[in-house]
Amino acid sequence: MSTETSTARDTARAMPPASIGVPNILRSEWTKLRSVRSTYWTLAAAVLATISIAVIACITYVHQYPSSPPGGRGDDLTLLSLNGLYLAQLAIGTLGVLAVSGEYATGMIRTTLAAVPQRRTLLAAKAVVFTAIALLVGEITSFAAFLIGQAILATAGSSDSLASASSLRAVIGGGLFLAAVGLLGLGLGAAIRHTAGATAALFGLLFLPSALVDLLPTTLRNDLIPYMPANAGSQIFTVIPNQGALAPWAGFAVFCGYAVVALGAALFMITRRDA
Figure (cartoon, rainbow, N blue to C red):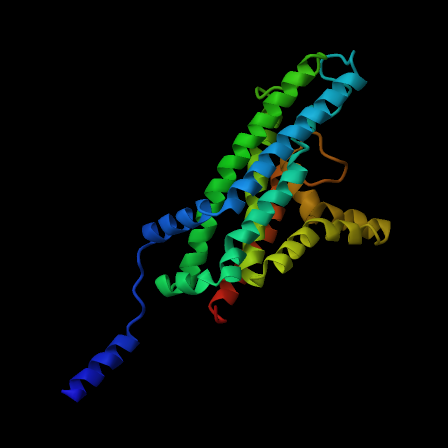
């Protein structure tokens, strides 16, 4: 009898842990993300920042150039409405960090990993759920900021329209950019596991490389600056690019590459350490 019991135990140990199913994991991650107040605060901050800056920037433009002809002065009027994305990225990126690091801070990650031993599947589910939310909110925010901003600019006879392929790409790109920033934050949060450290790494990665490259000799600087995260990513919501900048989709692809590296590092590390 004892031999049979020992054999059963050995067999149980040899069997891989059963999965609760990807749909259930996704549902669980959705429940966790919408159950914490930080999700609502950060998303609200991103929306308010984007729209508020659009209103302020466009009103200022109208007052400075009240008699601008249709088409303005050659300024990027679409970007004028989307300037708030530069601030919103901080909120969305922080939310990406919190989506993972918050569980480590509270110790809930142990319960999560006990329920879902497949760590890479768990992280992938977090990324899918977060991307869906960030993309939805990002697109709504980007379109709202553009429409409100252009309505203000139209009072001075200068505005862009979604009928323009470049403007439509830029507005859609604004939402894509925010989702990519959030994924970058999520990857760093999963790799570093500490909220403060991951947030500092995110902000540093977004802004520090461009500042450091500025210190290099001019020729080398000009070659490298288009590939810095902030410069590359922002091209997707820019209609009139700066000289030497990457093409919109090429720049966005480079920025996504940074997020992929962060997520890849997180996937590699998550199975090689304890919770």
